[in-house]
Length: 120
Image 1 (cartoon, rainbow, N blue to C red):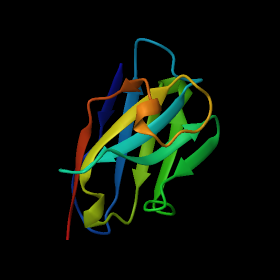
Image 2 (spheres, rainbow, N blue to C red):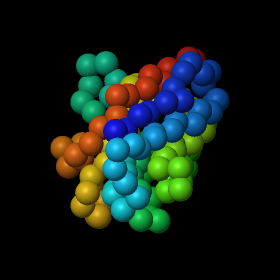
Image 3 (cartoon, helix red, strand yellow):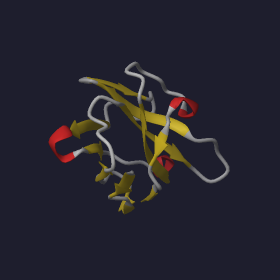
Image 4 (tube, one colour):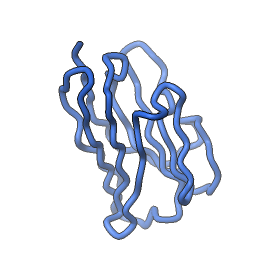
């Protein structure tokens, strides 16, 4: 029901835009989130959208921007000034509760993940 895309290989300082397309139900009122998981590490919060309010992890603040297009049932993560430490599998997620959570355990629906690799 959530399909993430847009990952790839990019040099440090470059940009990527991830997309997460929803299907099967309307997620327009849901809290949407992006998480990432590097090898050997726990899944970590990247960004979330609650209505028009965006929340970001300190590590990506000022570099990443999350947005949504309800008409297209799609959320985006624009990633600029990428660093090698941003390398991970990125997952989009949704939760029905309409308040912020940065914990992956609070999200009900998950996409399959898209690999982002940033070379130095």
